[in-house]
Structure formats: C-alpha cells, structure tokens
Amino acid sequence: MEIEVTNDELARIRKNKREITERFRDLEGLERTLRVLKLRFLIEQRERVEKRFIEMKASYIELTEFEETAKRDKEFLMAFRKELSEENKKLRAELEARRR
Image 1 (tube, rainbow, N blue to C red):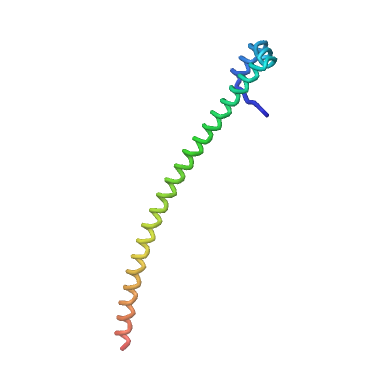
Image 2 (image 1 turned 180 degrees about the horizontal axis):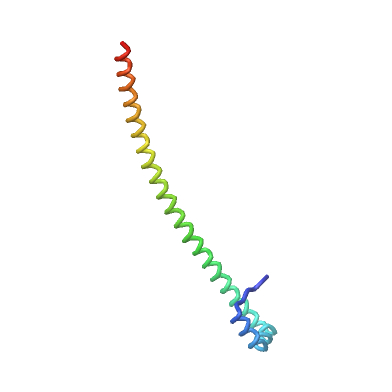
C-alpha cells in the first residue's frame, strides 16, 4: 500500500515523529491511524466519483444535444430531398413534352 502526502503533511509527520512512533506501538493508536487513513481514502474516492459523475453528465448533455441536432438535420435533408425529387419530376415532364 502506498500513501501519498503533501510537503506540509510530511513536515508535520517529521515534526511529530515521536508521537507517531508511539501511536504505532499501541493498538489503539494504530486503530485511530487506520480509521483516519480509511476516511482519507474514502474521501478521495468520493471526490473521484463526483468528478467522473460531472464529466459523464456533461457528456450525456452534449450527446443529447447532438442527437437533437442530428434529428433536425435529417428532417431538413429529407424535406430537401423531396423537393429535389419533385423538381426532377417536373423537369423530366417538361423535357418529355419538348421531345414530342
């Protein structure tokens, strides 16, 4: 297991080395230290999960907006295609009329 500490925390650890050493010698101190480390770990995990949730929520919103834009674009293109098809029919009819 690896524990990461900031420079400030490292300085406090060095300053309180004797207290920390005594704490590790007695079972109660070890249990308190374990609870503190466990709590710190859980807080870090929660922060990571919250950050990931925010990212996922933003991605979902972006994807939903993209989907709506795609639907509108498809409707526009289908209408445009229909207009082109109708115009082609008219032009073919005119061309046939001229050939006769």
